[in-house]
Image 1 (cartoon, rainbow, N blue to C red):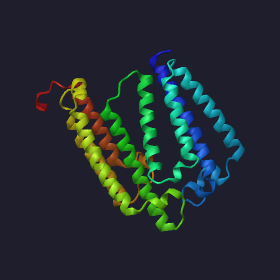
Image 2 (image 1 turned 45 degrees about the horizontal axis):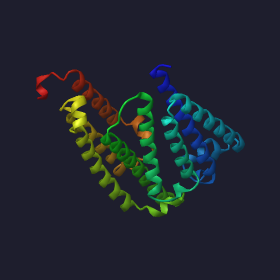
Image 3 (image 1 turned 45 degrees about the vertical axis):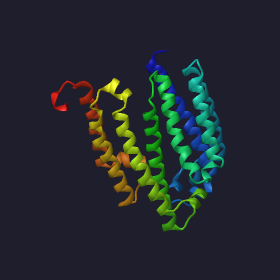
Length: 265
């Protein structure tokens, strides 16, 4: 198979495994989701899908995801990471999500495992700074989402997550400020690191402008508008974030393919 075929299979493998975990998580959270102003619409919580059907689908997705993970990489490295991802998230669904701090660390670690698996199937190397930034960004988004959950708990009085007992608005605000600063510093260090310089040249730090702008906008959405509950929804609906991402990608294009322009010096 071609490299592209392997990447598609790897993508499908993680989609199947993640979907299986989501079904199990929703199965265990049926009663809690019914108290949530949005999650009550989910198939299991609303009763649109039978519990037995959901469990059967979860098993089929797990087997399919594991089989594809085995086919992707004969060395077993991809399968090993996929299994760690699956077991870790299974443990999350069966209790670790009820432990404050542990819950958001597991969510962030899941994104790192996805990156490592993607690097294996794509046959590319990942630098230490890239892994650190992935973890910090995922942690930043998870903290913002927990803050939204705290606000929702305050507004409705419903305790929809046991882990919420270990969080307060002040605590999460402090964590957001802390990891926001670390994330920005990590990105700047990544752009000026030796590995980045050898691969892209010394001008990549210009892209930090758009990273900072994007983080500032996300903080504005979190603190001013109190709408950080769904990072995916923000990406789809917020024009500022969308433009910032496009400019960030465009700046990479300019630096990589028009690196001989003298005004970058």
